[in-house]
Structures are given as C-alpha cells and as structure tokens.
Amino acid sequence: MRETLLELAVFFRELFIDQGMEPFYAKLINAVLVFVVVLVALLILDRILRFIIVESFRAFTVKTKTTLDDYLLETKFPRYIAHIFPIILFRQLMPIALIDFPESMSVVLKLLGVYIVYLILRILRSLLRATKMYLKTKEEFADKPLDSYMQVLMLFFWGFGLMLIISIISGQNKWQFAAQVGAASAVLLLIFKDTILGFVASIQVSVNDIVRIGDWITFSKYGADGYVTEINLATVRVQNFDNTFTTIPTYSLISDSFQNWRGMQESEGRRIKRSILIKQNSVRFVSPADLERFKKISLIAPYIDHRELEVSRYNKKNQVNKELLINGRNQTNLGIFRKYADAFLHENPAINKNLFLMVRHLAPTPQGIPVEIFCFSRDKQWENYEHIQADIFDHLLSAVPYFDLEIFEAPTGQDIAKLQPN
Image (tube, rainbow, N blue to C red; front, side, top):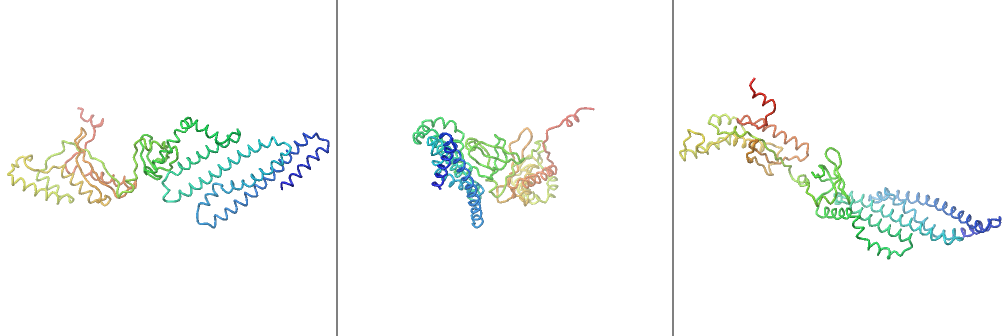
C-alpha cells in the first residue's frame, strides 16, 4: 500500500508540473490531495473496522455468562479499540503524503501523538467505568465507594496524560518535564486540596466501614436524613425521605459527627424512647377503695394482690399506724400506672421482649414528672414503627385518667380566659 501511495503521489506531482504548474504549488496541491485521499480512506476503514469489532464483541457478549463484557460494550470500549489500526496506518502513510514537505511532518506527528494519548485515556476510562459497573453488581463491593477510587485513578491518568501532551507539543524530554512538575507539587497540592482530602476520607470511610451505600444516616449540620445513594471522591449523596437530595463533603464524614442507623437496621428491634408528662399534684397514695377499683383492671390485678399482701405484712410486722396513709408502706396511683404500662408492653406482640424493656421515672421538671417508655419494636420499618409507637401512647394516654392521674398540658388562651370572671 505504501508503494501504491508513493506512486500515486509522484504521478500527481509530475502531472501538475507537466501541465505547466509551478513546482511549489504542484507539490502543495499534490500533498493536500494525497492527504485527503489517505484521510478519507482511513475514515472509511475506521467505520468498517468499528462495525466489525463492535458487532463481533456484541455477539461474543451474548454467549458469555459474565456481565463484564456487557459493561465494556456499554462504555464503548470496542469502538475505541477499533481506532487503533487506522491510527497506526495513518502514522505509516503520512511520510509519503508529506514527502515534499518533510518539515511539516513534525507538526503532524505531534498532533497525532496528542490524539494517541487522548485515545489511550478514553480506553482507560472505558475500562475503569466498566470495571466499576461490574463490581457494583457484586454483593461484597455493592456498599464500597468505588466511584472515589475510580475518580482518583482517572485523575492520575489524566494528569499523566496531560504531562505527556505538553511534553509532546513542547518537544521537551518527558522526564525533565516530570521533574519540573515535581518542583511545582506544592502548588498542585493546594489546587487539589479538596480532592486529596476526599480521597483520604473515602479510604478511611471504606476501611473503617463508617458508611456504606444504602445506609440510613442523619447529618443535622447539612440537613441530611435519608439513605446514602452514592459515595464518590468529593461528596456523599443522600436521598432524604422527602425525596430531596443532599450532598455532603466526603471528609465531613470523618471530621464531623453524624448518626448512622445501620446498627438499628441490623439489630432485632428499633428503640422506642418517649415520655408521658404527669402532673405532680395528681400523684397520691391510694386507699383500700382505690385498690379494689384498680383490681378490676385485668393486667395489674395479680400485681396489686401481690403487692398489697407484701405491704400489709410489712405494716403489720412493724405495727404501723395506718390512720394516716403516709405511715408505713403504701402504693401510689403513679406506681400502679407505671406497673400497668410495663405489663401492657410485655403483653404487646409488637414489642421485642428479648431486648431491653423498662418503664421509669425521670427527674421532675416544671412540666411534670416524665414517665419514660423504653423498649424496642420488632418491626424496624419506619412507617410500621411509627404506627406501633403511636398505638402504645394512644393507649397509655387514654389509660392515665383511670388511675386518677392527669397529663400535663400548658394552658392555652381559652384556658386562661375561662379563669377570668364574667
């Protein structure tokens, strides 16, 4: 082919000269004409090769079980590979096309070198993208920040490629140029500070298993409350429960405090921790008549009998004067209600009895005495969890008046107006 092209170039050049054209213009038109012929031929060859390679690769992917080749096809890897042979051929034929202008050959070779570097970078990018997509289908890599690692590799490749391109254009030795870049590393570190911080943070996040894709996190500083959908070099993307998205700097995951709900999701239950505020002046000792009335509540009837017997034995043994209820040991309406709440939780099938369960008093506040419910629901799904929690407190709030207790509630304008004389 080289000989044929050389003969064609000589033929056109001699033809133009024989037609009376000046040698310089004959050589110039001949060079342009041969260059266009070579370029058109190589473009046609490129399209033919691209079709053959892509279709052959597509047929190959159908027969294989692995999905890696499917992702290579999706990222256009075969198309980039198809460009290699035309470029090699172009490199071989250009000296013939520019035989009369050898000084132009260096410019063409530089441009060709730049394109070769660019093509190699596109091939590497395609390989990395296909590898990332393939690894994400594997369970062991599904929650890893693969985007961060691939971005770092591509930054390295692009940096190295840019160095090669500048070296090719300037004609400077590659290693001398690399030494100059090394001298300017302080400036590069300053420019890529966020990228470096993100890379280090993504490694720490992965190694220490701080966050995985799919984790539910709450990051109040950035207003994030939802599931992690993406972890890349610079940011972590969170889809909030209102379907908005929040982006968080990756290095914030190791420099700031946030809440990861993965432990709850992997445990046997989800915690319920909420209080009922009881008015302090509604708390009192219960009389025998009150006890008889409370015994009609089936959940606590056995407890009242047992407790009453224990209290009576103690008071009788110590000859306590029971003319006043404050003397000796006595039961209170708040204590009985607390036991009722405990028994109600133990009877509730939605509560996991294998995990910690407690009903307790907290320190009195100006708003009343907090009676805190601390337990774990079996169902951890948010919607079901909220229903379970609501059902518990609906029942307990309705049960409070049966024990002659009152719920604290700040007075409203209507409450204050009722106190004023008509």
